[in-house]
Length: 226
Image: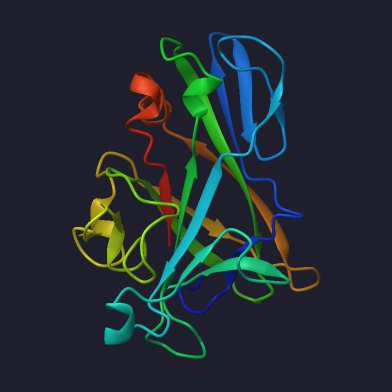
């Protein structure tokens, strides 16, 4: 088992199924980009397009980027993967890569008063390595920006976003200190030397997912992977 290297990577949007399935009030709701959903208030089905993925890294971290590293948004790298996960790069041991993931507008498709009985997340990785990889994740406890703000002053390794006049720092660089201590998520990602693609379905804490729904999703802070 290894935590080193960019052995695991979120797959490109063309092939990945990033979904959160919640069973609420005996009805299953699947949040997945491009999936047709009926809003809580009724009406015509709409295509869900509110998955927010951001990779924060120590890549090229220096004073010129405010020690914020290079940040990658969904689809901003190509062609084979969107972003990597790893606490040390084989090309530069000082580089770290972590991924923030959030399903915005979940409250629009799951009623705030529904009881979430179960929840799971399905993610597709690329792992060509011969070794399995330990992946850790957590529920975030503070908001983070997906877009907006000046370059290298919004979401990244040092900052969670931009408040309109200044950068908002994480509690500690890398954001892991802003994880909820209540739930620990970890799993071992097997390798696929022939094709690389490995899908994992992870059970999520129902109470933590429930907290994403009230007050128009004001406490929907998503997850962090490393």
